[in-house]
Image: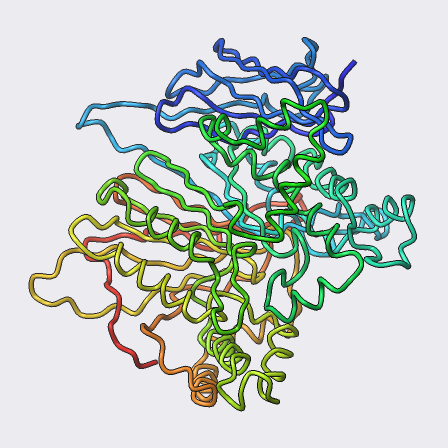
Amino acid sequence: MAGLRLGPLLRYVDWETASTATVWVEADRPCTAEVRCADGASGSSRTFAVAGHHYALVVVSGLTPGSTTAYEVLLDDRTVWPPEQYGFPPSTITTPAVSGAAEAAPSTVRVAFGSCRWAAPPGNGHLPGRSDPVGPDALDTLAARLAADPDAERPDVLLLLGDQVYADETSEATRRRLAARRDLDEPPGAEVADYDEYTCLYDESWRDPEVRWLLSTVPSCMIFDDHDVIDDWNTSAAWLAGIRATSWWHERIVSGLMSYWVYQHLGNLSPAELAADPLHAAVHAAPDGTEAVRRFAAEAAADPTRTRWSYRRIFGRVRLLMVDSRAARVLDEQQRAMLHPQEARWLREEVLSAPGSCDHLLIGTSLPWLLPPLIHDAEQWSAALCRGERGGPAGRWARIGESLRQRSDLEHWAAFPESFEQLTELIREVAEGPEAPATVCVLSGDVHHAYIAEPVPSAPSPGDTPAARVLQLTCSPVHNSIPTPLKAGFRFAWSGAGRLLGRLLARHGRTGPPSMQWHRTDGPWFGNQLMTLTLSGRKAALSLVQAKSRRTGTVLELAFDRLLTDDAPPRFSQSTKR
């Protein structure tokens, strides 16, 4: 009999017809996976095989708009979900109401997001009963609250903005599994080496009981960041040349992209995109899809133009663009770009398409666009040194810049100066004009703290049209930690003294002033946390909750809750002074 190894994960819910959804599962052998809903909706799919594992992404059709229905999962006609004596509420699929009436009330969309979840269980490597060494898991805590309170407001979608798994930072339990397979004294040591070892990471992350239930009932969108493959993935051409010279890198990158396609990317696709995906068709057509997925991943690793990991999702009048800011990079120092030209063209077309069709534009990129000013200037300074602004591309300053870039993680949007300016101008273009959305929000993680930043507003001129409010919303980690010295460093980076030091670096690197000013409006917050955007019509509100340990258990404490929109949102400042 087939058993359920992992899942179910509720991934895509259609907001246009509100009649279809997708559910991802992993079985322990070949079988037919079926999802049956209490309202009569259903779907089934034969599993496909990759490296001895068996998966299905089931398209559920016939859902009722504006409803919540419980579902069960069957493998070869045997119910495997929910398990017997299950301690959580039924897993459900919630669809939005669909109405064409002009007078209908605007739909409300709740978007929760965060990044960086190290999934090791609390007692792992520590004495039994000891508290979690990095604090309570925000996803665990959210799941517990939603399970305990049926009336609690649930997110309509959960955005996981990178570092869903840590291939380079494994837990003690995972290291024991790796040691049973190979000698950990040989490279890559206690890091994952191949596809099968990647499956251990997803087991550890998604078998967590609370998270398993949460992901079965709240739709999710995912994009990778560096730790899904390796810390500082694609920092620079020098970094890439060095790691390609190792004996283990090729298998790591190929396995990382293979597992990402199976476990994360497939569920990002709509049913129509899934039906048109040639790789999905190929793995279903073959008894074993391993070679097809491996070939695809190897080609994607060698040439980022061969595939697009970025994607678009629509939630009523909310448009979400999830952007690949890792694999799509151009690393040549003289043509350095966060996104290769095809990817940049896709983003521009998606941002500017159908003017007036959305009230809120969300750009999900794992790496923040707006950083603390000192860090921004340091990243642009190091990029300038590396391309030869001081002494040429082979000089001493170029070597210093590269060393600082790799040792200090200077590889966000600011470290790709032309890409930073292009994204800034693109956001300015969509944010201003009579058909501008109410908000343009860049959603990011990576930096293990949370903050809100926005461009400094300029005074409107007579006859100016309304402008969107533009915000950088950064939230991480979901479950990780940050050393105390780094907390102090981030605070200093926002300070006046930090700004002054940043200006000195910019002067030395001859980077020139930025095309706009920005400032931190709230934060920084440190801890395990999640942000939630609540969007209704042209109104937007933001909340931040943090997981805290109390005598009565783990709770989510509200750290921030505020309306983001008003009658006169600020405009971009045109000033070039900091």
